[in-house]
Length: 212
Image 1 (cartoon, helix red, strand yellow):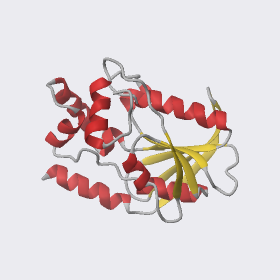
Image 2: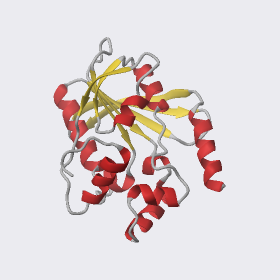
Image 3: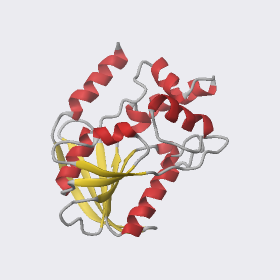
Image 4: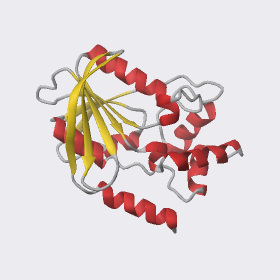
């Protein structure tokens, strides 16, 4: 019941208006970006947009919609491919000279960091990533991409060349004047520690992957 209430609360919060609260220049190892932080009037979520170059009319903008992964993006966990996907996306957008990377505050496919680590413990006992989330009382994927749509519209993006292997993400970021003109694969080769994780994403979540 408590997990159900938390999920309902998240869904309600995610329907609230999003506002741009701060912007600055951000030099990175991959070149110069603009960083924009979006927040809701209620809640503690902070979503980030990195913008490279001039977006012009917002057509065919190379875009990555990336959900936060403290373990992979920051701590370089070898349980997932998230950190490598983030680095690859930043590099490709920088090389393109024009693009957007959205970094969404949706840890653990939307269940939060503490629950994600609880799911890791269940995976240590034999569950795959989907089974672990479901045993904790959550959907296999609790992310909501409406926030991404709002951010893209605020940035003036009208169509994207989307860096993603996830068909559900394509559907989630389409609508309200925003479309996907092309899907660009962003596949990281499987390793001994990521093979089962990637196979679960392919078999149970429908990700387009060829290395597993």
